[in-house]
Length: 276
Image 1: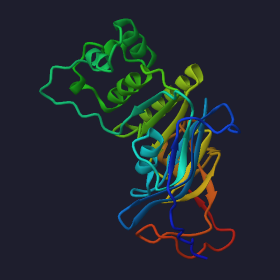
Image 2 (image 1 turned 90 degrees about the vertical axis):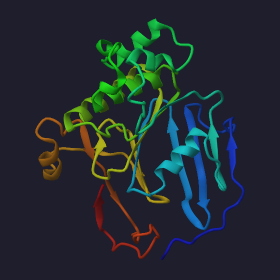
Image 3 (image 1 turned 120 degrees about the vertical axis):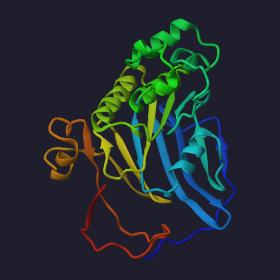
Image 4 (image 1 turned 30 degrees about the vertical axis):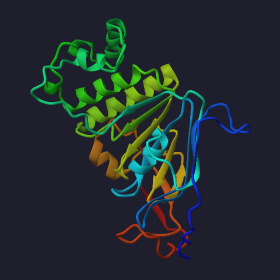
């Protein structure tokens, strides 16, 4: 049966968790609906991130991932449903692209110091933590894709975030660099214990360190733990020997399909498994 389109009710954004929420829930999106004009971008979406948990949000382009992130970051309120945040929640955000004027004389250390009120010792510590201390005096514009992502991650960590949100963290990074970056994110999680929300449009690439995967296409298609990669030929061919343990195939089952506009159509035949 097609998914019924419910009329949205007034949405809510709460800065304090409800009394019955677990203490380690950092942010929880409940039944969130967002519409732009007559287009429903998110339809009754649920998402929660706990302290020390890595959640990967995956889905095709135009599936509503950016809109959901804006809800999490507090940049947008839902038309229906609610967003519940922990008290005093500190957010660290790494955007997909960091734009720096190529004519601006800005080195890496100064770029981090622009986070505001940051001592040089903390800048050095942050760069050391992401493996980029040697780049402190390098012009930001000369960094490779992987280096720029690490520096942007260091800047986000200067906020000592409870929740770290990463938008396409592997964008512009080669395959080996992607695996190393994911390992760095896992190490930061293990050491600092923030919750981590990783956003990706690539349905075929999910890091093995992820605790939970949420597949979004305007609504939550499926959610669960990723399967570890063992001998999947597509991934072995793409990433090469030795990287399969750092990456994962997420195996799930859809009970529906989408047309080109993202609308829910007929149910899939029973037992039809998909890989994302």
